Image (tube, rainbow, N blue to C red; front, side, top):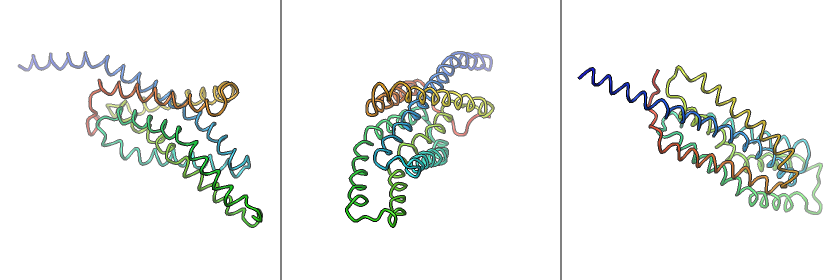
Length: 238
């Protein structure tokens, strides 16, 4: 019986290796594409908010601060949440789909922010010097309210993908490094394509649709791959 059991275990490992390799390839592709869409969104959202808040240094800093804060918070809390998720690739796909949803919703929210700025900060008699602090606070709060939800989800995506792709602690460093490399390469390509191709040829609105399409493609790929993936054990194997 022991010989038969050992033979069965070897067979399972042999059949599981190709599936795990395909699973790992999906993770790399997904994180590379999500990196491209993230930089596309960052570039486009900075320009969109700049149209409302102005192109001042304070306005640009407000956008960047909100973007980075969302990534940091998402990574922190996403790491805590991901440790107990048994189907992290499915959760990752849903997160990517939610980012796409926020990107589609953002133009409507931006119109609300533009109305609020016109209503409270461009009325006749508004003292710009006296109200500069209030205007700066509005920029910071507006950028945070608009960008924290999608960037929080972006930050949470890495812990979920690491949880999905890393099945053994011994492979943690190597695979996290590869995921970061894929994401960084995608981000660099996304920034270049957005600045030199998408924005000049498609304009701001259509460029965002390209990012939405990338996120939805990543979400679909992750969800389909999760249907064939095994549940991740808790805790990971050493």
